[in-house]
Image (cartoon, rainbow, N blue to C red; front, side):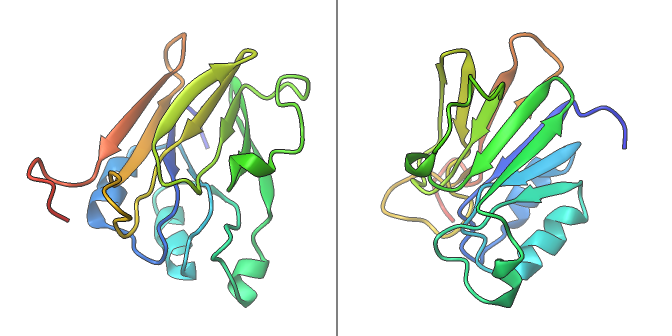
Length: 161
């Protein structure tokens, strides 16, 4: 594997992996799934694109899900990334632990913010629509400084699924 310059971020697929999500993640050097996968086949499809780091979400049950950790660490070149499903369950100080990025899911709301020099990213939900929240994935670009996050809306401009 070469240098990691683009990290695809996905979460809350809940058993639905849209073709648009696969297309959006296609050029990733690494993919992170922040939990609520919903079905093991989703992980297989993502692994076919790039190396995968995935954590278990609150809906992930069964033998296949027991193989997933609650948290994970991804070393993506200059970015040491901490991954968990629900940010409210963060039980360490990412800055003190020298993480540069924290990736989480659970809320289904795409978000990015900085705190104490750490970038926090929630790629939103790529699975079934929940309420009126967008259907998104994200791409973390490590080619530039500062690093950039791009959210990709998976629905067409008319808002159709």
